[in-house]
Amino acid sequence: MPELPEVETLRRALSRTLVGRTITGVEVRLPKVFQPAPGLGTRDVVGARVEAVRRRGKYLVLELSDGLSLVFHLRLTGQLVLMRDGEVIAAGGHPVPEFGSPLPHKATHLIFDLDDGSHLYFTDIRRFGFCLLMPTAEVATYLAEQGLGPEVLSPEFTLETFREVLRQRRAARLKPLLLDQRAIAGLGNIYADEALWLARLHPLRTAGSLTPEEEARLYQAIREVLEHALTYGVARVVGGRATPRAGFPRVHGREGEPCPVCGGPIERIRVGGRSTYFCPRCQQAPHDCASTGADR
DNA sequence: AACTACTCCTGGAGGC
DNA sequence: TGCCTCCAGGAGTAGT
Image (tube, rainbow, N blue to C red; front, side, top):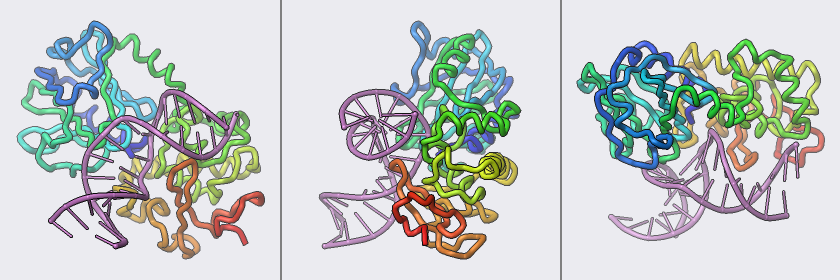
C-alpha cells in the first residue's frame, strides 16, 4: 500500500540521510527483485555514491554517481529501511515487518552496504516490488514508457488538467479512475477512498457525471488528503484494517464504524475487484446505480 | 473505452 | 492443532 505519501515521506527521509553515502557492497538475496539493464550488475553499483533521491508517482529513484540509477517500486508490501547498529535512520513503505525490528528479515531481498557502516534493506513480504538498475540517462524514458499521468502535488496538476482527465475518461467510474496511474500518478486504494469521501462523491459515479462544482471538490480533496498525510503522517493500514491516527484514515478500512461527519455506518463494496469504503449518506449513489444500500 | 478475471506472492484470520 | 478458504491490493495482461 505504499502510495504517494508513503513514497514521498521515504524520499524525504532518504534525501537527508542517504545522499552522499557510497555503496560498498550489495547482496541480492532474491534475484528476481533486482533487475539490472543489459550489461549492468551489482559490481557497477559498488563504489557509486548516492547523489539524489527522486520520486515520480510511486517510483523512487536513487540517482548514483557514474551515471547510474536504482529505480524502486514498492508495490503492495515493499519497504526500505536504512539502519546503523540496529538503529533506524530512515524507513518507509509497508509497515510490516515493523520498522525498528531486526533486519535482515526473511523477506529482505536486497541489502546495500554503505561507507558509514549503515545498511539499506529492501524487504517485501509479497515479493511484488522490484529494484531496477539502469543508466540515469534512461530513467526519464523508462518512466515515460509507464505512461504516468500528472503528478498530483506538482504545479502541473491544476484544476484544468484534472478536468481534462475527467473529460477524456467520461465513462469511467471514479474509483478505478483515481487508481489508474495513467490518469493521475500517486493515488492508491486508501487515499482514493479518502478523497472520494472528502469530496462527498460516490465511488461508482462516472467522471462525466460530475458538475463543475463537484469536479473542483474532488480536485481539492485529492490534494488535501495527500498533503494531510505528508504533514501529519501516513495512514497505517495492514491487511485492509486501519489503525487510525489523528482520525486518519476517515473511512478506509473502517467498515461498520461511524462516519466522522454524519455518524452513519461506513460501508464496504467491491469496485473493480478492490475493497472500497464509503459513507452511503454523505456519498450519494448515482441514479443509475443498482442499490448498494446507498440510495433511498 | 471500460469492464472482469487472472497473475504475480505471502501471511494472517476465521471456519470447522 | 491443523487444514482449508478467503482476503489484503499495485499493476500488468488477456479476453469480452
